[in-house]
Amino acid sequence: MSLIDWSNAPKFGRIAGIKGALQKLHDLCKQGEKRTIVEIGCARGDCKGSMEGDGWSTVAFGWYCSKNNGQLTTIDLSDKSIKVCKSLTANYSDCIDYVCKGSIEGLYNLREAGISVDLLYLDGSRHPANSYCEYYMIKNNLSERAIILIDDVNFDDNGKGKLVIPQLIQEGWLTNEKNNQQQMFWRK
Ligand SMILES: C[S@@+](CC[C@H](N)C(=O)[O-])C[C@H]1O[C@@H](n2cnc3c(N)ncnc32)[C@H](O)[C@@H]1O
Image 1 (spheres, rainbow, N blue to C red):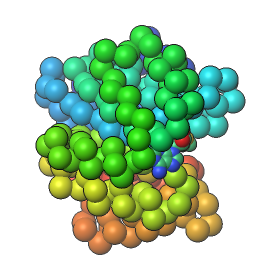
Image 2 (image 1 turned 90 degrees about the horizontal axis):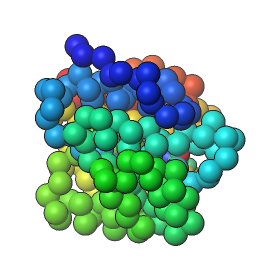
Image 3 (image 1 turned 180 degrees about the vertical axis):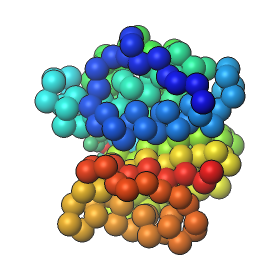
């Protein structure tokens, strides 16, 4: 197992979940091998509260991709969110595709383009049906080593994971205990 060198990492929040998912991805990839991350819901606020409250996942994923031959696609329907995200992640923009579309349309386009996804981060709409449909839209493009990370699973009604989590468990995906806010799934 080779560890990620976090010493020069930029600041981000939701550390346990995001670091855990990146380390798992890192373990599953051979050194230098191309890896692909897709996230729904980009970093949308440029203040510290947003970093702590939302996570700034695009910053963390973009930084990781810039160091490890990765490519990140971030999909968000809000022009404003994409604009803020571009400025937050300017240092890593070479390895980020910013897609300003609804999640289902954005994922449909990736699916049709035949992209293989190694890490899928579901952090868009709060409506549980959205995460479920997003998973279904890109399901057949998830690689053998794919990891799925879901945010906001810490609500009484299980938040964004309410519908997709039972489905993943039924399909035999492995999972950890949710760490307060996020839950990760993997195949191997
Ligand atoms: C919680 S924020 C994402 C936070 C970000 N992942 C971070 O770590 O900072 C949710 C984002 O999802 C976007 N969003 C909500 N519904 C969406 C949908 N159906 N398709 C695409 N983006 C959506 C919003 O515009 C918003 O920018």
